[in-house]
Image (cartoon, rainbow, N blue to C red; front, side, top):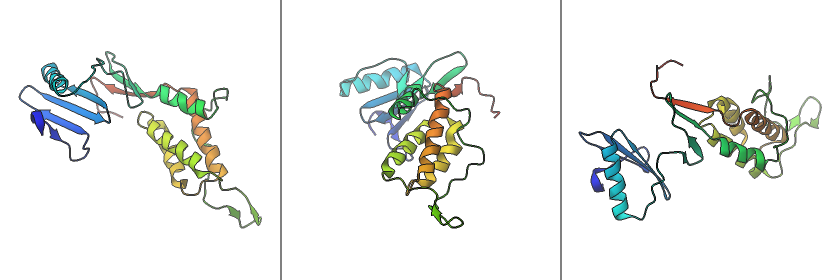
Length: 197
């Protein structure tokens, strides 16, 4: 590749350049670039190469990229998706709703069954517009990038994408109400990780 970069075989939008000075990494998403590395010299050289070949704007230290917000602290980089979470809450009209303390109801049993064989009646209706549920679960899946506490609930909900029912949508809305409890929750990329869980 040009300028000594190697394209990752796992993610074609990731370019890496290693030298005796250090490493520089460029992540490309449509018209946004993230440039980072272990050497400010390599980073500055990369920015100059990009500037010479393209019309780019340098927005300085990383603060926001692909819906993820970054902060720089002495302990490391706290990352979260507060703005993205608030958009989900707002789009569902849940701004005035009461937050919930857990993402999943205790003993929740979601199923694909619509007909209750014991009572002989329909116990849970299939949604007329499954796209609404599918979009919400997709958005929640992206939110798990910085919210591992949502992973179990969202992965469970994603099993019902084909024919979601009212109970599935209610469970997804519960997850959003849980997010409302602390929309700025995220993870810390520690400067000095100790390796413990």
